[in-house]
Length: 315
Image 1 (cartoon, rainbow, N blue to C red):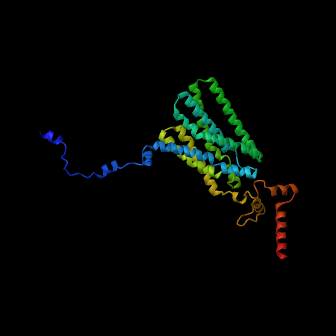
Image 2: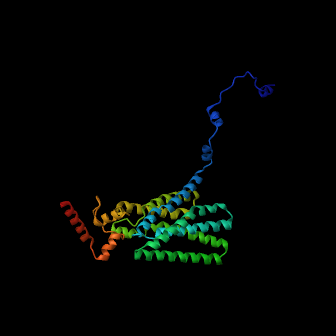
C-alpha cells in the first residue's frame, strides 16, 4: 500500500518546486562555440598549436627574402636555415605519405599537412638565395648543403628500393628525425661570424623567434606523447634559437642603416643619416658600385658633398 502510494502520480494541485542552479544550468541551451570547445582535449590543442607554429616558422623568412629581391643581394646571410626548411618540408611530407601508404593510418597525414607549405616555400627561399647570392663563401656553403641533401636523397632511394617496406619506413623516419635535429642547429651557422664582427645582421630575427616558440610547443607535444624522437631535436632547437636571440640582443644589427630606397642608401653610405653612425656598407648599393668602378673613395665623395653643401649655404 505504501509503495503504491509513493508510485502514484502527483495531484494537479501540487506545488511546483523551482529547479536548482545545477538543473537550470543543465537546461540552458548551449551555443555552437561552447559545443566546439567542449570537444577539445589538451592533446588536441597541443597538436593544433604544433601545426600553427610550423606554418609560422615556414612563413617567417618571407619578408627577408622579399628584401633580397628588392636589393638584388643576399648580403651576409647563410643558406642553412632555408635549405633546412626546404629539405625538412619535403622529407617529412614524403615520410607522412609513405607511412600512410604502408600502415593505412590517416593520422600520419598530419605530417603532410604541416610540412607541405614548408617544402614549397623552402624551395622558393633556396632558389632566390642561389640566384642573388654575391658572397663567394656563402655560395660555397650553400653548394655543400645541397650536396649533402642530394646524398641523403640518393641513399634513401636506394634503401627503399632494396630493403623491405617496414625497415625502409623505419629508416626514412630516423633520417627525418636526424634532419630535424640538424635543422634545429642550422641557425647557428653564422654564430662565429657574429662573434667576430659583433654584428648579428646575418641572423634572421623573425625566423629565430618563430623557431624558438615552435620548438617549445613541439617539446610539449613530445612530452605529451612521450616520444624522445620528437622531444630531443626540439630541445636542441630551443637552445639554438635562444642562443641566437641572445646574440641578437647583445650585438644589434645595423640593418636600419641600409634601407632599400636610393636616398637611404646614399645617406647610409655617406654617414649623414640622423642618429646613425657611419658604417661600412655590407651589401652592394648602386652608389657604392659606381664609386668602386670609378676609383672614388667614399671619404672623398663625402668631403665633396660637404663642400658643395657649404658653398650652397654661403651663396
